[in-house]
Amino acid sequence: MKHARSLPPANAASAATPATAPPPTTTIWAADALLPAGWARDVELTWDPQGRLTDVRTGASPAAGQARAVGPLIPGMPNLHSHAFQRGFCGLTEYRAQAADSFWSWRDLMYRCASRIDPAQVEAIATWLYVEMLEAGYTSVCEFHYLHHDPQGQPYAPRPDMAMAILRAAQRTGMGLTLLPVLYQTGGFGGAAPHAGQRRFLHGTDAMLRLLGTLKPLCDAQGARLGLAPHSLRAVPPDTLTEALAGLDALDPTAPIHIHIAEQTKEVDDCIAWSGLPPVRWLLEHAQVGPRWCLVHATHMTPEETLDAARSGAVAGLCPTTEANLGDGFFDMAHWREGGGLWGIGSDSHATVNAAEELQWLEYGLRLTTRQRNVMADPAQPHVATAMTLAAVAGGAQASGRPVGGLQPGAQADFIELDPTHVALAGLPARDMLSAHVFGSHRTSAIANAWVAGQARVRDGRHALRDTAAAAFVDVRRTLVTDA
Image (cartoon, rainbow, N blue to C red):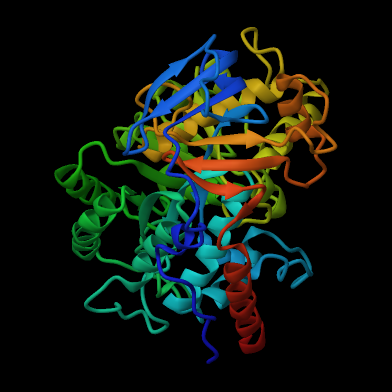
């Protein structure tokens, strides 16, 4: 098998900086910045050597020699749901494989890709994907990582090579990471046996808890967060769910918990046939669902389920472009907001890797279903792009279990500078620039620069690893297509 083109060492991004570059900036001034309470003028951000904001001052005058943002600053967007390896076959499933294609036929094609990919290829794909994300407005990602074992389903002993590939990709690119190893045991509700396409995903409960114990110090060492992802109620039996969550609590009682739930109507019907309850209702009645939880998709709920799930404090993990690509359906945002629910966005299968486009799709879906405009605006923020950005950042930060909730003291210095020379933005006030970025940039990035933990990771729209990472990704994809 042809291997991925070799990537630079983990410090390549910093090594690519010219030797004459000035020392790292610990403060920046912007004429306009989007703070948690809304837009502010003349804002000075200051952060410490660990990349945490220590001061956010409004009404400030720029100091002599201080770095100045040319365009408005907005908070970096947390991507709360990603399956990195699936970026390797985007665009390759857009043909009719049977009389009525659906999520389930797409899943069979996904399994074929998953059966062949190796750790080096996963690292190359994830590295390119995280470069794409950083250039498109995401500054952290929750990696829902379920590709664990070799093609025969055997562990990569003694190391968790697949998870380490994800960690290396995040470290190379500077992407903030919440690593969510996926617990997967059964092929359907009621303990149905898994089939061959799922063998790379499977873990016994004890084995999963040992994996978490191995990964915890590795995540801590690079500032990543570790959590757990019970894949779904169809893949994790009730006793296993209880035991695994108890083991997670013993390791870290604050660790985030993510689960796929109620994505497809077949899943809902099968859950009712098994338990007498739809999946979200079952989960609410059998687990202590609360702010640590992210309910990914949660597309098909009754109004009562929606209100109760929202009031639990859990975050709804919405992935509008993937949900559209897979024909999932559309989320009941009206009842979720009525219940005070938090939400965030993810790129999931990476049909689109663009934070602004996920927001656009979410709003446009609501416009189509309600036949209204500017649905996601609120009394505090009548500009819909501003309201959605602030809400998605807050929800994504909670779901990631990391301090990435916006431009405020104590949060990580993750922020984006919009490009005021982009044709869609040029000459507009700051809040209208953000609106144009979300609704008018026509799939072209209006992002000039991006910082993660106070480190510039994207300059003039480009990541330092862009060319090398793209070439390695293309090599991998060519191999996967040739071997299909």
